[in-house]
Length: 268
Length: 239
Image (cartoon, rainbow over all chains, first blue to last red; front, side, top):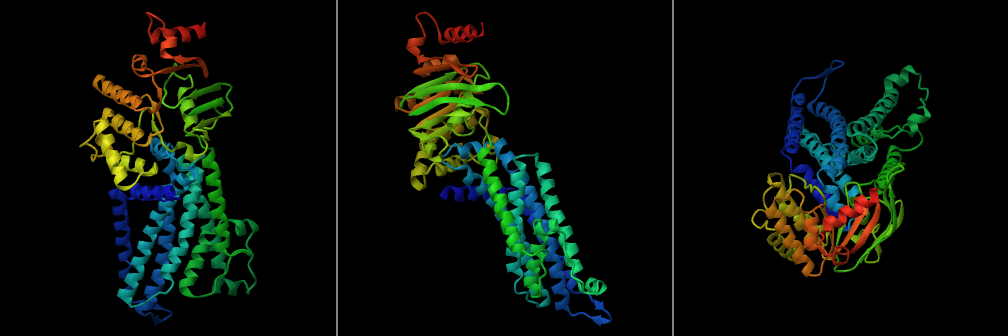
């Protein structure tokens, strides 16, 4: 187990030693800070002026979704060439020539990428949380817990792209990972839009059923909606009979098992 | 110490066998050279020893433990052919990682790393990034890493590859020193003159099979060199 944590530590060092990582983080935090500009405007909805806290609250929810989805792309980019790069720069040879199991190596590397991507997302969400608190005086209990919950999505994408990269070129693996998440975003967003008051009133409150494939598809977007429901404190409608946390847990286990099996067979 | 038992390796569905039913054992303290033309199966044999590739049939054991078990690689040092080291690491960081993964920590690791840096002639240059190293310096750090963790067995795949004559002489001296300390060494090399100067035992591999194995004194006759033996064995097999 200690070897596994050592490999996680090396992965963190390997990923964040680059200045470009901190530049990207700094630029992202800068963009998030621009959100403060939204709080100072005068907004009127249906003739009613919105107070700063309400505006900040809605802007923070939108920013939450954008950051959570954007970090999935960053996780994809970090994962897509993880094993190929290790093979090219000799990392895999020097690690596996030691008494280190392939499982410890593969999951140590993947977990390191996940921690970096998760930290990236958490810093951005924390920034939003703080500027909402400081600029608008609004607190959003559950905001940071929701960020932690979304890390399940990040881990799923990391494991999926790492697994796919063992069978196909990096770019194809990244594209496939984006497609899996993208389909989830489209299917789940359509479903959640259909649950809105407006659509429900048009549909005369008839229940909307998702097709079976959509119910079984990885619930990347639904998990994000569920996380946001923790902030909002409202009801959450899930596609299909199974809660997205359970669905994503199953998919995480499947991706992890696939990665373990595939890496055990990989020739170096 | 090391036992290859009826090991066969066929890559993919190809009809060509990289390694064809090889049985080979290496005693503790033995310095064995694997010789053979390109594509003979030497590197595949080493990769199976380190569990980088799985044998199609047969098995490999290190000190009685199957090479499939990670613990079998405890005390094994490996220098790969065309050594590659992540360019953002310093030589010292690389050696530290090797030491940690081999189970060395703290003062013990620091002391061993200092010793190894002296042995390979890299003391004082270890804090520079690997990307600034010459080919010879890379090879020396790689050899240092192999020595660091190779208390039980050293596997050296073309250790003098890319080195200048002085570097080759230094590496020969290091291998000589290790042999005198009783290390078990498997050397994969094309430089027959170097092998002749350093090894006890030679195994000539051709087309995935062992064509000849024996001690240097047994296989190299009066008035001939190892190169003569090698050419005779390989060309004889092709006739």
